[in-house]
Length: 315
Image 1 (tube, one colour):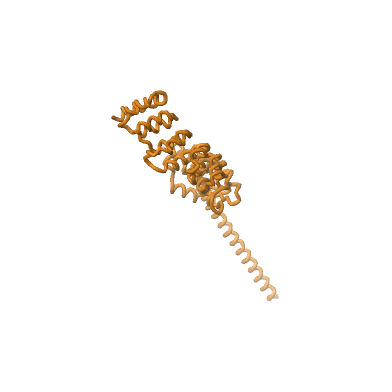
Image 2: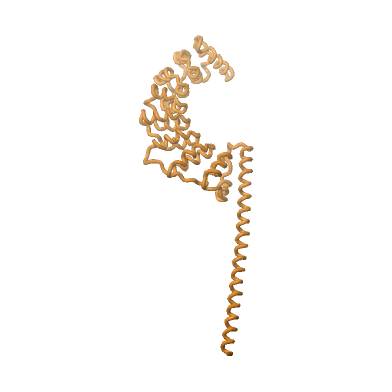
């Protein structure tokens, strides 16, 4: 069957498979990607269509398991996990990660508890699903990796990041961990994450935050740093940014606005350095003039002393 014919058959399956006898449509698609049919049945949430696929010996792969977890089709998921015709093993773990990524806490609790691990905590944190992260940590005993906090910060999920930092495995949170969170937040323009981070006693401001914000075209984040960070944007930070440049995903118009702002700052650096040079020259001249005055005064005193001495001797 050619691809276009197969595509039309799949469309027919999607429209009719849940309501009519799917076996007829499946027979028309036998020479296509049979795993695609099983996947489609799962995405539709049709246990009947999936049953027809399995009865007709259609191939089943991990895509279907992951889709069932993602969409929260618990009964279909259980049936797939019991299926001995899965092309690839490890589907349960991948399904658990997929469910965590979209916050399917109930699906994890009722159907995938045996497959959860630290990767699920990371996926849930990345998606900003605090309830799911708490379930994995407090009910399943999953160790929350510190990278979960990084992922939450990158997505702007300050509440999830805070929980991940409080419950991260290991010997506690380090200043470097907070710095990484801040850098990831700056890349996404998430200033509220920095509002949370700055409350930690070990948090340290860094000029690299400007570089990360600029590299990803986050002008508002950059301006927020200018107003709130005790560390100003320096010529050294400018050189760092020029060395790395913009990320490839930054749109041209966004990069243009960021460049205009940085160019304005660069002109201020130049003006400041010129003023500093002029000021140092003036100071030097004043110091030289003062030295000359002291020398003239000393000479005058000396001449006066010699004159007085001669007058005394003459008398």
